[in-house]
Image 1 (cartoon, each protein chain N blue to C red):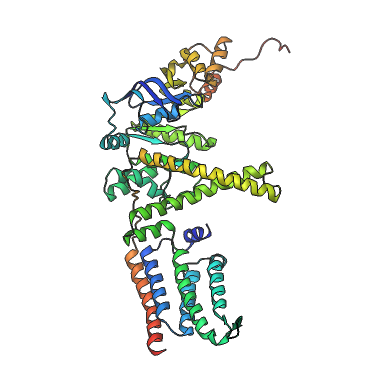
Image 2 (cartoon, helix red, strand yellow):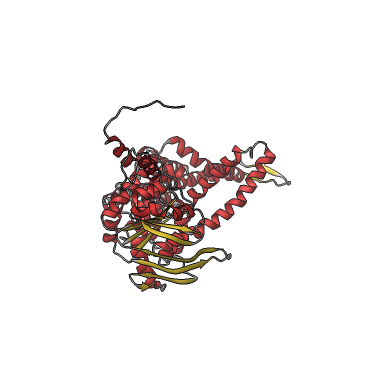
Length: 246
Length: 284
């Protein structure tokens, strides 16, 4: 929900998804090419700056969204520094620190590029981009339905949970567990009912077998793609220079 | 325009949705379906749109039996659009304009035509400029209007609405009523189900009363005063304006004549009377 809200509120909401996709792709490719920690750090920093300063995504939102992948990344990197000892057991291996730091920075640069895309691109625009990239229609239909149902079911869950709380359903941990279980069971029925209702609603509007929607138009797309290509080229040039002369 | 001839429908669980329902809906008019919960109003609307097929009986569009083949249903649903009661059960796209474009694209129209229809439908429901808004950020009333726009974009001749006023506050109901008036003025035939007898009395040209899966009476709205028994059988009380007018006529406050169609009209009739001093004593 936080990602969705940020994508709709940011300054780049109206920017063509192809432009943002190209810039993110360039960031990922540059992170893959660059070698030195300094270059990788710079790439990560530039992607973050583009998201925070360029698209005006709030820092608090950025950190909240990045927290989970950063936690995973930190844990993975820390475990890489622990190796089996010769006499059995485990030992701390500082000698691996440069290699692990390189991996961490590379991952961070890729993460920053991906976050730049998802935090500035609403889901419907991402679906549009995937449609242009010839992703199978069935998968896109399912993604579109899942996205919509996420909000519908969340609302149904909130309403059910509030109704339970109003009748002391969450008075203690035992009641809370019971209420949550009951609600989960009820949600399964609701999912089935809502799926039937959506099928009926689609049939009522002459559904022909696939969910077809009007593609969004981005009148400035050409200029935006050109700018994204330029910015992406700068990232790639940095990475190539680092790769060749670093 | 649409006729139902002894239509029955039995659901998979064995319950009867419609039982020998016969009804004729004239084109270019405003029709209100009245009935208690479970009377068969929603089932009837779903038959009109071809979502349900009768277990017995026939439906006719301009004299021809409904064609339940793929092409026939597409043609029928282009002409007869249905707006569901709960918008969250109808809207499945992320963006407003995407959802509104769903129907016209299913009709095989080109993108430019669809884009023009989407803009026109959103303007008609007062949501011009909302096209790029995510559906989940809209209020209930706005979602309801998006549902109507989604059907209007298919440019139907008949618009079916299942309890359109349900869940709307008074200002939103007034907005929706104004929208229905505009659509009726454009020649769209409107059929809606409602529990609000005062609204039906004020708005409809024809009133159809349902009970236990049957249409027990159909009448031009101005003749409703002669159908009060059928109205009660359909689980409805007489409209307030009608009942109050009858009382005022009985007490010779107002002259006998056609009953006003709304409380506002009744108040206007009262205000038009010359102001007189009350005579006599009030006995408590």
